[in-house]
Image (cartoon, rainbow, N blue to C red; front, side, top):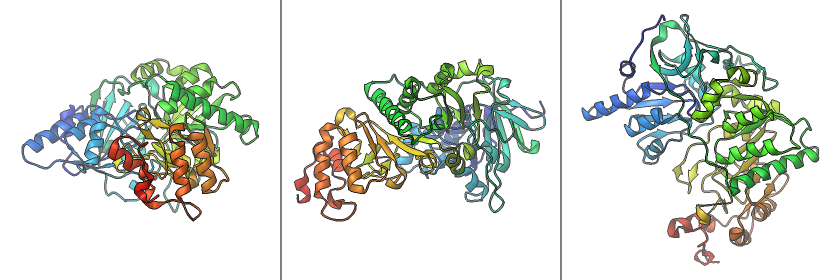
Length: 498
């Protein structure tokens, strides 16, 4: 091999305080595993010696316990974007030890190329293969690697022995031109390939290769319960109804699905729905459920930015690449989340919410309006540009102490203008063509838990005037009741003069 072999500790020594560091991967898949851990150890030693040491981390989406987790525990992250989901980093963000700015996933690479965030000092990239000319074959997640590899002053490669050289051909690496020279992205169906199977890196920038030997460490999702199964059935029922009504073509359209147990339930529901034909996906993440659907023959192709699979499923896929090679393509986030391509293909957007308000606004990110959970991720990319935009969530959480349908969302990530349909375990609220009061009535009657419907209708009746009849002094009464008593049922409208 033409490049120096480094230990993780030697690689970490190449990274300095206040460096801008770009990481490979997307939703943990393909994220670095050993250099970031060594960097966290370096930060701890620097802090113990009384010296400052923090870096600015730019990724594709969330990473893993070896990256965001270890660095957050070492208090080694100054700035962070565009998405995260590790508990340790979440604590740092909410205590302002880390300056996190939330961002649509489709935007970060181009903003970096525009010079918005300054120079990129180092890129740490996990690979399956390194060629002597600097070309690399990536692993299970691409994220923003093509841009980071182009812009970084130096590149550290993590060569993961768990990734077979047979990964060659699974990726479609393409960098759009920047304005004013940008042209259309020529993807006209999910299976189109428009770029290269490898990332081409200037060999002079490759500082060295570090060996690793780990799967991505993604836990499998919990077993589906009655609530998530019902949400999945409700989503499928809605889509079948759209096909019967002629609002969806009989051949169906590509699907995007968010991450998590609710999203998995929806995907399994699609697999069981006999009226829904074989379909393709144009999405940012492929989960275990999609692999099962491919094995069943229900999902015939998936375009994605990452294979976010449990270790068991990752091992199965990597040992059967010949079966999956013509069924999967892994692209950069700029392509997987491109508003242009999403709108052209007519992608059905299916995402999850923390809470929805009765007028159709969605909170995807902040618990009780203040504490960052994970981030907006790619939901906005798909929601704003999808053929149909669906948000789902359970009607209640914490045994009913929290209603996920509230008078006013405590934080708004997606406004009513981008939300077509809200679905819970209780039912479906199709909001298309409705004014705010009509939307409120439909959401309360169809999606709210029965134990909260009267309270929500009472709030709606409090409004005296205006197209959207909020009563501002009472609009967050559900949240304040929860903070005061631990139960949203304990709303007392008389506190607000009613």
